[in-house]
Image 1: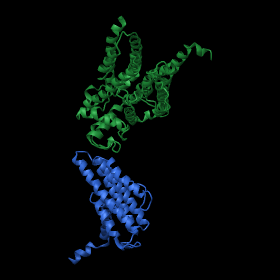
Image 2 (image 1 turned 180 degrees about the horizontal axis):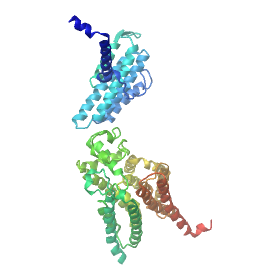
Image 3 (image 1 turned 135 degrees about the vertical axis):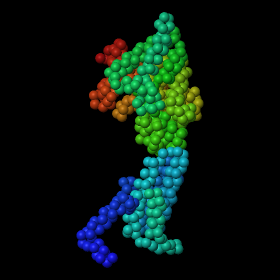
Length: 189
Length: 374
Protein backbone atom coordinates (compact mmCIF):
# COMPACT_ATOMS: atom_id res chain seq x y z
CA UNK A 1 0.00 0.00 0.00
CA UNK A 2 2.76 2.41 1.07
CA UNK A 3 4.71 1.45 -2.05
CA UNK A 4 1.70 2.28 -4.25
CA UNK A 5 1.32 5.70 -2.61
CA UNK A 6 5.02 6.43 -3.13
CA UNK A 7 4.61 5.57 -6.81
CA UNK A 8 1.63 7.89 -7.10
CA UNK A 9 3.47 10.89 -5.67
CA UNK A 10 6.46 10.54 -7.95
CA UNK A 11 7.43 13.99 -9.49
CA UNK A 12 6.30 13.07 -13.06
CA UNK A 13 2.83 12.16 -11.70
CA UNK A 14 2.63 15.29 -9.53
CA UNK A 15 3.01 17.46 -12.67
CA UNK A 16 0.09 15.60 -14.29
CA UNK A 17 -2.04 16.05 -11.16
CA UNK A 18 -1.34 19.78 -11.11
CA UNK A 19 -2.24 20.04 -14.77
CA UNK A 20 -5.52 18.19 -14.16
CA UNK A 21 -6.36 20.42 -11.19
CA UNK A 22 -5.64 23.53 -13.28
CA UNK A 23 -7.91 22.34 -16.12
CA UNK A 24 -10.72 21.43 -13.71
CA UNK A 25 -10.36 24.80 -11.95
CA UNK A 26 -10.56 26.71 -15.23
CA UNK A 27 -13.61 24.65 -16.19
CA UNK A 28 -15.26 25.34 -12.84
CA UNK A 29 -14.59 29.06 -13.03
CA UNK A 30 -15.86 29.37 -16.58
CA UNK A 31 -18.81 27.06 -16.74
CA UNK A 32 -19.94 25.76 -13.40
CA UNK A 33 -20.19 29.06 -11.63
CA UNK A 34 -20.92 31.75 -14.22
CA UNK A 35 -22.71 33.90 -11.64
CA UNK A 36 -19.48 34.86 -9.99
CA UNK A 37 -17.19 34.93 -12.97
CA UNK A 38 -19.20 36.57 -15.72
CA UNK A 39 -19.79 40.26 -15.99
CA UNK A 40 -23.23 41.08 -17.37
CA UNK A 41 -23.57 43.39 -20.38
CA UNK A 42 -26.86 44.62 -18.93
CA UNK A 43 -26.84 48.40 -18.54
CA UNK A 44 -28.11 50.04 -15.37
CA UNK A 45 -29.55 53.57 -15.46
CA UNK A 46 -27.82 56.71 -14.20
CA UNK A 47 -28.62 57.59 -10.59
CA UNK A 48 -31.98 59.33 -10.32
CA UNK A 49 -33.12 61.86 -7.69
CA UNK A 50 -31.62 60.97 -4.29
CA UNK A 51 -33.34 61.11 -0.86
CA UNK A 52 -33.02 64.67 0.44
CA UNK A 53 -33.41 66.20 -2.98
CA UNK A 54 -36.34 68.61 -3.50
CA UNK A 55 -37.60 66.50 -6.37
CA UNK A 56 -37.40 63.18 -4.51
CA UNK A 57 -41.00 63.27 -3.24
CA UNK A 58 -42.60 64.33 -6.56
CA UNK A 59 -40.47 61.66 -8.12
CA UNK A 60 -41.98 59.06 -5.75
CA UNK A 61 -45.44 60.29 -6.71
CA UNK A 62 -44.57 59.94 -10.37
CA UNK A 63 -43.43 56.40 -9.64
CA UNK A 64 -46.89 55.54 -8.28
CA UNK A 65 -48.70 57.20 -11.20
CA UNK A 66 -46.54 55.56 -13.85
CA UNK A 67 -47.33 52.15 -12.36
CA UNK A 68 -50.79 52.48 -13.92
CA UNK A 69 -49.38 53.58 -17.24
CA UNK A 70 -47.41 50.34 -17.44
CA UNK A 71 -50.49 48.14 -17.60
CA UNK A 72 -50.34 44.55 -18.87
CA UNK A 73 -48.11 41.80 -17.54
CA UNK A 74 -45.18 42.65 -19.80
CA UNK A 75 -45.65 46.33 -19.05
CA UNK A 76 -45.59 45.54 -15.33
CA UNK A 77 -42.44 43.49 -15.87
CA UNK A 78 -40.78 46.48 -17.51
CA UNK A 79 -41.97 48.80 -14.79
CA UNK A 80 -40.83 46.57 -11.91
CA UNK A 81 -37.47 45.78 -13.45
CA UNK A 82 -36.91 49.46 -14.25
CA UNK A 83 -37.70 50.42 -10.66
CA UNK A 84 -35.53 47.61 -9.30
CA UNK A 85 -32.64 48.87 -11.44
CA UNK A 86 -33.21 52.44 -10.32
CA UNK A 87 -33.20 51.52 -6.63
CA UNK A 88 -30.13 49.31 -6.86
CA UNK A 89 -28.24 52.25 -8.38
CA UNK A 90 -29.66 54.47 -5.65
CA UNK A 91 -28.57 51.99 -2.95
CA UNK A 92 -25.06 51.72 -4.41
CA UNK A 93 -24.69 55.52 -4.58
CA UNK A 94 -25.95 55.97 -1.02
CA UNK A 95 -23.62 53.25 0.29
CA UNK A 96 -20.73 55.07 -1.35
CA UNK A 97 -21.75 58.26 0.46
CA UNK A 98 -22.10 56.44 3.78
CA UNK A 99 -25.87 56.98 3.92
CA UNK A 100 -26.44 53.45 5.19
CA UNK A 101 -29.99 53.89 6.44
CA UNK A 102 -31.27 55.31 3.15
CA UNK A 103 -29.20 52.78 1.22
CA UNK A 104 -30.74 49.93 3.16
CA UNK A 105 -34.25 51.23 2.36
CA UNK A 106 -33.39 51.57 -1.32
CA UNK A 107 -31.99 48.07 -1.40
CA UNK A 108 -35.19 46.69 0.14
CA UNK A 109 -37.26 48.55 -2.46
CA UNK A 110 -35.05 47.17 -5.23
CA UNK A 111 -35.57 43.65 -3.85
CA UNK A 112 -39.34 44.07 -3.78
CA UNK A 113 -39.47 45.38 -7.33
CA UNK A 114 -37.17 42.58 -8.47
CA UNK A 115 -39.49 39.96 -6.95
CA UNK A 116 -42.47 41.73 -8.55
CA UNK A 117 -40.80 41.66 -11.95
CA UNK A 118 -40.50 37.89 -11.67
CA UNK A 119 -44.16 37.66 -10.65
CA UNK A 120 -45.17 39.80 -13.65
CA UNK A 121 -43.22 37.50 -15.91
CA UNK A 122 -44.93 34.46 -14.46
CA UNK A 123 -48.30 36.16 -14.99
CA UNK A 124 -47.36 36.85 -18.61
CA UNK A 125 -46.48 33.20 -19.05
CA UNK A 126 -49.85 32.21 -17.61
CA UNK A 127 -51.43 34.45 -20.28
CA UNK A 128 -49.59 32.34 -22.90
CA UNK A 129 -47.19 35.11 -23.82
CA UNK A 130 -43.73 34.08 -24.97
CA UNK A 131 -41.45 35.48 -22.28
CA UNK A 132 -38.16 33.91 -23.35
CA UNK A 133 -36.65 37.31 -24.23
CA UNK A 134 -37.79 38.86 -20.96
CA UNK A 135 -36.40 35.94 -18.95
CA UNK A 136 -33.00 36.46 -20.53
CA UNK A 137 -33.26 40.15 -19.75
CA UNK A 138 -34.11 39.40 -16.13
CA UNK A 139 -31.14 37.05 -15.85
CA UNK A 140 -28.88 39.73 -17.27
CA UNK A 141 -30.28 42.21 -14.78
CA UNK A 142 -29.78 39.77 -11.90
CA UNK A 143 -26.15 39.23 -12.89
CA UNK A 144 -25.56 42.97 -13.08
CA UNK A 145 -27.23 43.58 -9.73
CA UNK A 146 -25.08 40.86 -8.13
CA UNK A 147 -21.99 42.43 -9.70
CA UNK A 148 -22.87 45.82 -8.22
CA UNK A 149 -23.69 44.33 -4.83
CA UNK A 150 -20.45 42.35 -4.69
CA UNK A 151 -18.47 45.50 -5.44
CA UNK A 152 -20.33 47.43 -2.76
CA UNK A 153 -19.93 44.65 -0.23
CA UNK A 154 -16.15 44.68 -0.68
CA UNK A 155 -15.75 48.17 0.80
CA UNK A 156 -18.62 48.30 3.26
CA UNK A 157 -18.60 47.42 6.97
CA UNK A 158 -20.59 44.35 7.94
CA UNK A 159 -22.60 46.13 10.62
CA UNK A 160 -23.09 49.80 11.47
CA UNK A 161 -25.01 51.56 14.18
CA UNK A 162 -26.97 54.38 12.63
CA UNK A 163 -27.50 57.14 15.15
CA UNK A 164 -29.09 60.28 13.70
CA UNK A 165 -29.96 63.25 15.94
CA UNK A 166 -33.01 62.94 18.23
CA UNK A 167 -33.73 59.42 17.00
CA UNK A 168 -33.00 56.11 18.69
CA UNK A 169 -29.87 54.49 17.20
CA UNK A 170 -30.48 51.57 14.87
CA UNK A 171 -28.19 48.71 13.91
CA UNK A 172 -27.93 48.11 10.19
CA UNK A 173 -26.69 44.70 9.11
CA UNK A 174 -25.24 45.71 5.78
CA UNK A 175 -23.61 42.39 4.89
CA UNK A 176 -26.79 40.51 5.76
CA UNK A 177 -28.87 42.90 3.64
CA UNK A 178 -26.56 42.59 0.68
CA UNK A 179 -26.34 38.81 0.97
CA UNK A 180 -30.12 38.59 1.07
CA UNK A 181 -30.41 40.84 -2.00
CA UNK A 182 -27.92 38.65 -3.85
CA UNK A 183 -29.73 35.47 -2.86
CA UNK A 184 -33.04 36.85 -4.22
CA UNK A 185 -31.35 37.46 -7.56
CA UNK A 186 -29.49 34.17 -7.62
CA UNK A 187 -32.77 32.29 -7.37
CA UNK A 188 -33.64 33.08 -10.95
CA UNK A 189 -30.27 32.15 -12.43
CA UNK B 1 -75.21 61.76 -71.96
CA UNK B 2 -73.49 58.96 -73.84
CA UNK B 3 -70.17 59.53 -72.03
CA UNK B 4 -71.79 59.52 -68.62
CA UNK B 5 -73.55 56.28 -69.54
CA UNK B 6 -70.24 54.60 -70.41
CA UNK B 7 -68.16 56.24 -67.78
CA UNK B 8 -69.33 54.28 -64.75
CA UNK B 9 -68.98 50.75 -66.24
CA UNK B 10 -65.56 51.70 -67.63
CA UNK B 11 -64.57 53.06 -64.25
CA UNK B 12 -65.80 49.91 -62.51
CA UNK B 13 -63.74 47.78 -64.88
CA UNK B 14 -60.73 49.98 -64.28
CA UNK B 15 -61.11 49.69 -60.50
CA UNK B 16 -61.36 45.91 -60.74
CA UNK B 17 -58.13 45.88 -62.75
CA UNK B 18 -56.52 48.14 -60.17
CA UNK B 19 -57.64 45.79 -57.39
CA UNK B 20 -56.17 42.78 -59.21
CA UNK B 21 -53.00 44.77 -59.89
CA UNK B 22 -52.63 45.56 -56.18
CA UNK B 23 -52.27 41.85 -55.39
CA UNK B 24 -49.11 41.71 -57.49
CA UNK B 25 -47.46 43.49 -54.55
CA UNK B 26 -48.26 40.81 -51.98
CA UNK B 27 -45.62 40.50 -49.30
CA UNK B 28 -43.76 37.20 -49.31
CA UNK B 29 -43.90 37.06 -45.52
CA UNK B 30 -47.65 37.57 -45.38
CA UNK B 31 -48.29 33.93 -44.61
CA UNK B 32 -52.04 34.47 -44.33
CA UNK B 33 -52.26 35.16 -48.07
CA UNK B 34 -49.41 32.88 -49.13
CA UNK B 35 -51.57 31.20 -51.80
CA UNK B 36 -51.85 34.46 -53.71
CA UNK B 37 -48.16 35.30 -53.62
CA UNK B 38 -46.53 35.52 -57.05
CA UNK B 39 -43.48 37.71 -56.47
CA UNK B 40 -44.45 39.50 -59.71
CA UNK B 41 -43.75 43.02 -58.48
CA UNK B 42 -40.16 42.19 -57.58
CA UNK B 43 -39.34 40.07 -60.61
CA UNK B 44 -40.96 42.33 -63.23
CA UNK B 45 -40.02 45.75 -61.98
CA UNK B 46 -40.05 47.57 -65.34
CA UNK B 47 -43.44 46.18 -66.34
CA UNK B 48 -44.98 46.89 -62.94
CA UNK B 49 -43.64 50.46 -62.93
CA UNK B 50 -45.06 51.11 -66.41
CA UNK B 51 -48.40 49.60 -65.47
CA UNK B 52 -48.58 51.68 -62.31
CA UNK B 53 -47.78 54.84 -64.28
CA UNK B 54 -50.49 53.98 -66.78
CA UNK B 55 -53.04 53.27 -64.07
CA UNK B 56 -52.30 56.58 -62.32
CA UNK B 57 -52.70 58.48 -65.60
CA UNK B 58 -56.00 56.70 -66.34
CA UNK B 59 -57.13 57.44 -62.79
CA UNK B 60 -56.58 61.16 -63.42
CA UNK B 61 -58.48 60.98 -66.71
CA UNK B 62 -61.41 59.48 -64.86
CA UNK B 63 -61.07 62.23 -62.24
CA UNK B 64 -61.26 64.88 -64.93
CA UNK B 65 -64.24 63.29 -66.65
CA UNK B 66 -66.12 62.75 -63.41
CA UNK B 67 -65.62 66.34 -62.30
CA UNK B 68 -67.01 67.52 -65.63
CA UNK B 69 -69.98 65.18 -65.46
CA UNK B 70 -70.73 66.02 -61.85
CA UNK B 71 -70.56 69.73 -62.66
CA UNK B 72 -73.06 69.14 -65.45
CA UNK B 73 -75.18 67.08 -63.11
CA UNK B 74 -75.21 64.06 -65.42
CA UNK B 75 -73.54 61.77 -62.87
CA UNK B 76 -74.30 61.55 -59.19
CA UNK B 77 -71.32 61.84 -56.88
CA UNK B 78 -72.89 59.29 -54.54
CA UNK B 79 -72.84 56.59 -57.24
CA UNK B 80 -69.17 57.15 -58.09
CA UNK B 81 -68.08 57.23 -54.45
CA UNK B 82 -70.01 54.09 -53.54
CA UNK B 83 -68.75 52.22 -56.59
CA UNK B 84 -65.18 53.20 -55.75
CA UNK B 85 -65.59 52.06 -52.15
CA UNK B 86 -67.26 48.81 -53.08
CA UNK B 87 -64.50 47.69 -55.43
CA UNK B 88 -61.37 49.14 -53.83
CA UNK B 89 -62.36 47.78 -50.44
CA UNK B 90 -61.12 44.41 -51.74
CA UNK B 91 -57.75 45.74 -52.95
CA UNK B 92 -54.53 44.68 -51.27
CA UNK B 93 -53.74 47.41 -48.72
CA UNK B 94 -49.97 47.04 -48.50
CA UNK B 95 -49.42 47.68 -52.18
CA UNK B 96 -47.68 51.02 -51.63
CA UNK B 97 -47.15 51.22 -47.88
CA UNK B 98 -47.02 48.81 -44.98
CA UNK B 99 -48.59 51.17 -42.46
CA UNK B 100 -51.79 49.17 -42.23
CA UNK B 101 -49.87 46.21 -40.83
CA UNK B 102 -48.51 48.51 -38.17
CA UNK B 103 -52.03 49.68 -37.29
CA UNK B 104 -53.24 46.08 -36.97
CA UNK B 105 -50.26 44.90 -34.94
CA UNK B 106 -50.29 47.90 -32.61
CA UNK B 107 -54.00 47.31 -32.01
CA UNK B 108 -53.14 43.68 -31.27
CA UNK B 109 -50.60 44.78 -28.64
CA UNK B 110 -53.26 46.91 -26.98
CA UNK B 111 -56.44 44.91 -27.37
CA UNK B 112 -55.37 41.28 -27.74
CA UNK B 113 -52.34 41.22 -25.45
CA UNK B 114 -53.71 43.97 -23.19
CA UNK B 115 -50.35 45.71 -23.09
CA UNK B 116 -49.68 49.43 -23.34
CA UNK B 117 -48.53 50.01 -26.96
CA UNK B 118 -46.60 53.08 -25.80
CA UNK B 119 -44.50 50.84 -23.55
CA UNK B 120 -44.39 47.47 -25.27
CA UNK B 121 -43.01 47.23 -28.80
CA UNK B 122 -44.55 44.64 -31.11
CA UNK B 123 -41.25 42.79 -31.40
CA UNK B 124 -41.29 42.15 -27.65
CA UNK B 125 -44.21 39.79 -28.27
CA UNK B 126 -41.94 37.03 -29.44
CA UNK B 127 -43.54 34.41 -31.64
CA UNK B 128 -46.43 36.56 -32.88
CA UNK B 129 -46.97 35.82 -36.57
CA UNK B 130 -47.66 39.49 -37.40
CA UNK B 131 -43.99 40.20 -36.74
CA UNK B 132 -43.13 38.42 -39.99
CA UNK B 133 -44.48 41.29 -42.08
CA UNK B 134 -44.98 44.27 -39.73
CA UNK B 135 -42.56 47.12 -40.35
CA UNK B 136 -41.30 49.36 -37.52
CA UNK B 137 -42.08 46.56 -35.07
CA UNK B 138 -39.09 47.72 -33.04
CA UNK B 139 -40.89 50.93 -32.14
CA UNK B 140 -43.63 51.65 -29.64
CA UNK B 141 -46.95 53.02 -30.96
CA UNK B 142 -46.32 55.63 -33.65
CA UNK B 143 -49.77 57.22 -33.45
CA UNK B 144 -51.78 59.05 -30.85
CA UNK B 145 -54.34 57.54 -28.48
CA UNK B 146 -57.39 58.54 -30.58
CA UNK B 147 -56.19 56.32 -33.38
CA UNK B 148 -55.15 53.47 -31.09
CA UNK B 149 -58.63 53.45 -29.54
CA UNK B 150 -60.28 53.54 -32.98
CA UNK B 151 -58.24 50.54 -34.13
CA UNK B 152 -59.83 48.59 -31.28
CA UNK B 153 -62.95 48.32 -33.47
CA UNK B 154 -61.31 46.35 -36.32
CA UNK B 155 -59.44 44.32 -33.73
CA UNK B 156 -62.73 43.38 -32.12
CA UNK B 157 -64.47 42.71 -35.46
CA UNK B 158 -61.55 40.56 -36.59
CA UNK B 159 -61.94 38.20 -33.65
CA UNK B 160 -58.33 37.05 -33.90
CA UNK B 161 -58.45 36.34 -37.64
CA UNK B 162 -55.78 38.43 -39.35
CA UNK B 163 -57.48 38.76 -42.74
CA UNK B 164 -60.82 39.76 -41.21
CA UNK B 165 -59.01 42.26 -38.95
CA UNK B 166 -57.07 43.68 -41.91
CA UNK B 167 -60.21 44.25 -43.95
CA UNK B 168 -62.09 45.57 -40.92
CA UNK B 169 -59.28 48.09 -40.63
CA UNK B 170 -59.89 49.05 -44.26
CA UNK B 171 -63.60 49.29 -43.50
CA UNK B 172 -62.94 51.72 -40.66
CA UNK B 173 -60.98 53.99 -42.99
CA UNK B 174 -63.62 53.60 -45.71
CA UNK B 175 -66.35 54.73 -43.31
CA UNK B 176 -64.38 57.89 -42.50
CA UNK B 177 -63.79 58.49 -46.21
CA UNK B 178 -67.56 58.42 -46.75
CA UNK B 179 -68.14 60.64 -43.71
CA UNK B 180 -65.58 63.15 -45.01
CA UNK B 181 -67.17 63.25 -48.46
CA UNK B 182 -70.54 63.83 -46.84
CA UNK B 183 -69.17 66.50 -44.50
CA UNK B 184 -67.59 68.46 -47.37
CA UNK B 185 -70.90 68.20 -49.20
CA UNK B 186 -72.70 69.48 -46.11
CA UNK B 187 -70.29 72.40 -45.66
CA UNK B 188 -70.09 73.45 -49.31
CA UNK B 189 -73.49 72.18 -50.46
CA UNK B 190 -71.74 71.42 -53.74
CA UNK B 191 -71.26 67.86 -55.07
CA UNK B 192 -68.51 69.23 -57.30
CA UNK B 193 -66.48 70.52 -54.36
CA UNK B 194 -66.94 67.26 -52.52
CA UNK B 195 -65.91 65.38 -55.68
CA UNK B 196 -62.73 67.46 -55.96
CA UNK B 197 -61.63 65.78 -52.75
CA UNK B 198 -63.38 62.41 -52.80
CA UNK B 199 -62.52 61.48 -56.37
CA UNK B 200 -58.94 62.72 -56.27
CA UNK B 201 -56.88 59.63 -57.24
CA UNK B 202 -54.35 60.29 -54.47
CA UNK B 203 -57.10 60.47 -51.86
CA UNK B 204 -58.71 57.30 -53.22
CA UNK B 205 -55.48 55.30 -53.41
CA UNK B 206 -54.08 56.40 -50.07
CA UNK B 207 -57.39 55.99 -48.29
CA UNK B 208 -59.35 53.19 -49.92
CA UNK B 209 -56.37 51.09 -51.04
CA UNK B 210 -53.63 51.76 -48.47
CA UNK B 211 -56.01 52.55 -45.62
CA UNK B 212 -54.02 55.43 -44.13
CA UNK B 213 -55.34 57.02 -40.98
CA UNK B 214 -54.95 60.59 -42.30
CA UNK B 215 -58.58 60.60 -43.41
CA UNK B 216 -59.63 59.81 -39.84
CA UNK B 217 -57.52 62.69 -38.52
CA UNK B 218 -58.72 65.16 -41.13
CA UNK B 219 -62.36 64.19 -40.79
CA UNK B 220 -62.27 65.19 -37.12
CA UNK B 221 -60.33 68.37 -37.92
CA UNK B 222 -62.96 69.39 -40.45
CA UNK B 223 -65.78 68.31 -38.16
CA UNK B 224 -64.24 70.45 -35.43
CA UNK B 225 -64.33 73.59 -37.60
CA UNK B 226 -67.80 72.74 -38.87
CA UNK B 227 -69.20 72.29 -35.35
CA UNK B 228 -67.58 75.52 -34.18
CA UNK B 229 -69.15 77.28 -37.18
CA UNK B 230 -72.49 75.90 -35.98
CA UNK B 231 -71.75 77.33 -32.52
CA UNK B 232 -71.36 73.86 -31.02
CA UNK B 233 -68.19 74.71 -29.16
CA UNK B 234 -67.96 71.61 -26.93
CA UNK B 235 -68.37 69.17 -29.80
CA UNK B 236 -66.01 71.22 -31.93
CA UNK B 237 -63.24 71.21 -29.36
CA UNK B 238 -63.75 67.53 -28.63
CA UNK B 239 -63.43 66.69 -32.34
CA UNK B 240 -60.35 68.89 -32.48
CA UNK B 241 -58.76 66.90 -29.65
CA UNK B 242 -59.58 63.60 -31.35
CA UNK B 243 -57.93 64.89 -34.51
CA UNK B 244 -54.81 66.20 -32.77
CA UNK B 245 -54.31 62.91 -30.93
CA UNK B 246 -54.06 60.92 -34.12
CA UNK B 247 -50.82 62.24 -35.56
CA UNK B 248 -50.47 65.61 -33.84
CA UNK B 249 -50.19 67.36 -37.25
CA UNK B 250 -53.51 69.15 -36.84
CA UNK B 251 -51.98 71.10 -33.95
CA UNK B 252 -51.05 73.43 -36.81
CA UNK B 253 -54.72 74.38 -37.03
CA UNK B 254 -54.66 75.98 -33.57
CA UNK B 255 -53.91 79.48 -35.02
CA UNK B 256 -57.10 79.15 -37.09
CA UNK B 257 -59.09 78.34 -33.97
CA UNK B 258 -57.55 81.35 -32.25
CA UNK B 259 -58.58 83.48 -35.26
CA UNK B 260 -62.16 82.19 -34.91
CA UNK B 261 -62.29 82.86 -31.16
CA UNK B 262 -60.75 86.33 -31.46
CA UNK B 263 -63.29 87.29 -34.14
CA UNK B 264 -66.10 85.91 -32.04
CA UNK B 265 -64.85 87.78 -28.95
CA UNK B 266 -64.72 91.04 -30.93
CA UNK B 267 -68.18 90.19 -32.25
CA UNK B 268 -66.92 90.36 -35.81
CA UNK B 269 -68.61 88.33 -38.49
CA UNK B 270 -66.54 85.26 -39.33
CA UNK B 271 -65.73 84.63 -42.95
CA UNK B 272 -65.66 80.82 -42.93
CA UNK B 273 -64.35 80.72 -46.49
CA UNK B 274 -61.27 82.53 -45.22
CA UNK B 275 -61.02 80.21 -42.22
CA UNK B 276 -60.97 77.14 -44.47
CA UNK B 277 -58.50 78.86 -46.77
CA UNK B 278 -56.18 79.62 -43.85
CA UNK B 279 -56.56 76.02 -42.70
CA UNK B 280 -55.54 74.85 -46.17
CA UNK B 281 -52.49 77.13 -46.08
CA UNK B 282 -51.42 75.96 -42.62
CA UNK B 283 -51.80 72.30 -43.47
CA UNK B 284 -50.00 72.92 -46.74
CA UNK B 285 -47.16 74.51 -44.77
CA UNK B 286 -46.76 71.48 -42.51
CA UNK B 287 -47.04 69.23 -45.54
CA UNK B 288 -44.14 71.11 -47.16
CA UNK B 289 -42.15 70.95 -43.92
CA UNK B 290 -42.44 67.17 -44.01
CA UNK B 291 -40.08 67.29 -47.00
CA UNK B 292 -37.18 67.77 -44.57
CA UNK B 293 -38.01 64.41 -43.02
CA UNK B 294 -39.79 62.51 -45.76
CA UNK B 295 -42.72 63.65 -47.86
CA UNK B 296 -45.14 60.75 -47.81
CA UNK B 297 -47.86 60.90 -50.49
CA UNK B 298 -50.73 60.46 -48.02
CA UNK B 299 -49.70 63.65 -46.17
CA UNK B 300 -51.23 65.61 -49.05
CA UNK B 301 -54.67 64.65 -47.68
CA UNK B 302 -53.98 67.16 -44.87
CA UNK B 303 -54.43 70.15 -47.13
CA UNK B 304 -56.40 68.67 -50.03
CA UNK B 305 -59.43 68.38 -47.77
CA UNK B 306 -59.48 72.16 -47.16
CA UNK B 307 -58.54 72.98 -50.73
CA UNK B 308 -61.70 71.22 -51.89
CA UNK B 309 -63.78 73.60 -49.77
CA UNK B 310 -62.21 76.69 -51.33
CA UNK B 311 -61.43 75.56 -54.90
CA UNK B 312 -61.81 79.15 -56.13
CA UNK B 313 -58.31 79.68 -54.68
CA UNK B 314 -57.00 78.44 -57.97
CA UNK B 315 -53.26 78.44 -57.27
CA UNK B 316 -53.74 76.27 -54.21
CA UNK B 317 -56.15 74.01 -56.08
CA UNK B 318 -53.74 73.52 -58.97
CA UNK B 319 -50.83 73.03 -56.60
CA UNK B 320 -52.85 70.33 -54.87
CA UNK B 321 -53.59 68.73 -58.20
CA UNK B 322 -49.92 68.82 -59.19
CA UNK B 323 -48.86 67.30 -55.90
CA UNK B 324 -51.55 64.63 -56.14
CA UNK B 325 -50.15 63.49 -59.48
CA UNK B 326 -46.49 63.93 -58.53
CA UNK B 327 -46.77 62.15 -55.20
CA UNK B 328 -48.40 59.13 -56.80
CA UNK B 329 -45.66 59.04 -59.42
CA UNK B 330 -43.06 59.22 -56.65
CA UNK B 331 -43.72 55.54 -55.94
CA UNK B 332 -42.31 54.58 -59.32
CA UNK B 333 -38.54 54.96 -58.65
CA UNK B 334 -38.74 52.44 -55.81
CA UNK B 335 -40.96 50.12 -57.83
CA UNK B 336 -38.44 50.25 -60.65
CA UNK B 337 -35.20 49.98 -58.66
CA UNK B 338 -36.15 48.46 -55.31
CA UNK B 339 -33.98 51.14 -53.75
CA UNK B 340 -35.03 54.13 -51.65
CA UNK B 341 -31.77 56.05 -51.87
CA UNK B 342 -29.27 57.45 -54.41
CA UNK B 343 -30.69 58.05 -57.90
CA UNK B 344 -34.00 56.64 -56.79
CA UNK B 345 -34.37 59.39 -54.19
CA UNK B 346 -33.40 62.10 -56.70
CA UNK B 347 -35.91 60.74 -59.25
CA UNK B 348 -38.57 60.59 -56.55
CA UNK B 349 -38.10 64.25 -55.61
CA UNK B 350 -38.14 65.32 -59.26
CA UNK B 351 -41.34 63.37 -59.83
CA UNK B 352 -42.98 65.00 -56.82
CA UNK B 353 -42.22 68.59 -57.78
CA UNK B 354 -42.15 68.52 -61.59
CA UNK B 355 -45.94 68.18 -62.06
CA UNK B 356 -46.48 71.00 -59.53
CA UNK B 357 -44.16 73.30 -61.46
CA UNK B 358 -45.76 72.37 -64.80
CA UNK B 359 -49.29 72.88 -63.47
CA UNK B 360 -48.40 76.22 -61.88
CA UNK B 361 -46.67 77.50 -65.00
CA UNK B 362 -49.70 76.55 -67.11
CA UNK B 363 -52.01 78.16 -64.57
CA UNK B 364 -49.99 81.38 -64.43
CA UNK B 365 -49.77 81.56 -68.23
CA UNK B 366 -53.53 81.38 -68.39
CA UNK B 367 -53.84 84.52 -66.31
CA UNK B 368 -53.53 87.68 -68.42
CA UNK B 369 -53.25 89.98 -65.40
CA UNK B 370 -50.12 88.18 -64.30
CA UNK B 371 -48.47 88.78 -67.64
CA UNK B 372 -48.58 92.51 -66.94
CA UNK B 373 -46.12 91.98 -64.13
CA UNK B 374 -43.71 89.84 -66.12
